[in-house]
Length: 296
Ligand SMILES: [Zn+2]
Image (cartoon, rainbow, N blue to C red):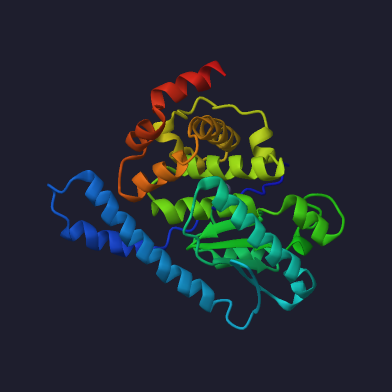
């Protein structure tokens, strides 16, 4: 059976967001422009993210903390011997991803290193679902969570925990999710975030997930970009979903020169529809990307 080590992005929609969205829906007039509604939704999302962030930090009250540059790592006593290296690595990875994506207003990155898969899953609201219990990383509520390499249990072979961590840690991947989310306040399709995280991780570490490398088949399911996000909930086509997300996002990132990604994220943060913003900054739309995907 294939080991699942994908991150658990999306398993963590803050419950409080639903309340805020209901509130917004009750006050927004029907003649407000869609971009303005999306921007309002983004602000509600950011507010909810802040609430969830504070709540998550309460759950690690009393844990040890290691500071390293722009990263603040929470860990348990069991990981005291590797916390310093992990925090240093997190800070370096954060700077690397911010540079790659043109994120020039980074705040302190919060990282929580959980001592087990189970503790990470428990920490993430909704983490019991289809994402499975073998995710080594997660990004939710403005926090990067990861399972301590001591608990990986041979997932990536045996060896020294620090060495395994340096080679297989999910930090670049999860930090890419985090940076996009901070810049665009939730206004992006999930496939783009998963694709971006894989592209950034591959560029930084050369690592490709087993899921993405696996033979991808659509199984007769519609995996066109407009509806691709729905397929994240299907186990049978998940490899194809991750593969297509990465492939298409790689095409987009290759087209976005210089500050192109930051411009795209800025427009998303202003509430622009994703495909409209994509066309504006890259000239690409879903039709062009689907054609390239078919002819690859
Ligand atoms: Zn991910």
